[in-house]
Length: 410
Image 1 (spheres, rainbow, N blue to C red):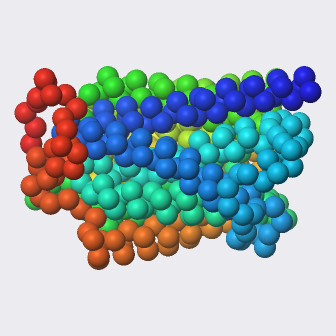
Image 2: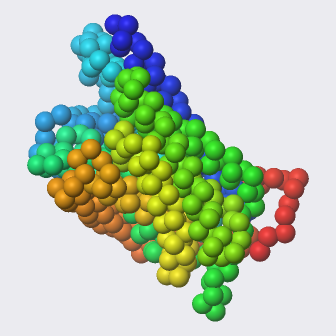
Image 3: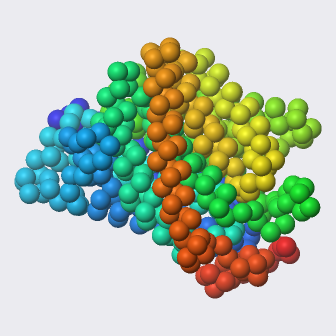
């Protein structure tokens, strides 16, 4: 009982840290976008976490962990009331690492992250209604079904060499990243982002707030990766936190350096996204890597960020916060890195990692395209030109984030 209590307390702390990450995402997104859309972004982030938790309780948790199933789709029933009918037996006898209730809450905090990634990529021009519909379907159904393929004991877990994703480089970050890519393609760029085919910078209105958001996210990753040990095991937990932090540091430094060499300026936003890229990159194998491996993985992720952002711009895709480069591209890199640096590194593991990446690309691209394309052809997904120019806060919310500090914005 004492061990269970210790493990469970650690898991609850990690749950709180992952919850705190949603504030980090909110700060990052509003900091890197314009003042006139601040309320809109904050509303979306609050909607994601509140509705995400309710959906995960109603259907998501039992879709993601259905027990015995065919490896692709299973459902253990609606709601979380089953343990209550057994006089609370599952509450304490769930496993030695944590209780049934802690498991639900910890996993529920992960569930909403996928939609939050999309929120940043579509910022400043997507209608709030269609985004809310997308969030309900994607978080409520697609994320848990996809998650069951690995974490729920599905077909990726039963491969001869099982696909490995410790804390979600693919299961969380790429799931959000693929949907972000599809949404950005269907939505189009913001007005003024590309003039006569040339890229135009649209600066964020509060870079200090974006910086605070990244520091909060880094702190939250202590719970994101540390909690994925699923116990308070001192050796494995401390190693995981070390590799997580080293990858983040290496990602930031290398992104800043490569950005300087490429663009001849010290870009803080690239530095920040490099840190996030390092964090996403190490997430798939944080428990398997040595400190040196973690630095290499993070450093490569940092370099990837700079070139991925440039490529996305050349393709005339408008991602205001760099979500696709950070969460999708670095998520893929981190997943494949397990096959290069992990405990079972080699051809078999690398092939399994490729199968996992391809499987999630398939379900995420197909489902997100279907959801968003149908809405685009029916209700429309983009605000009017006037609404975009004047700001979504005024038109969709009738509010101003900074009523006493109006800035001249175009």
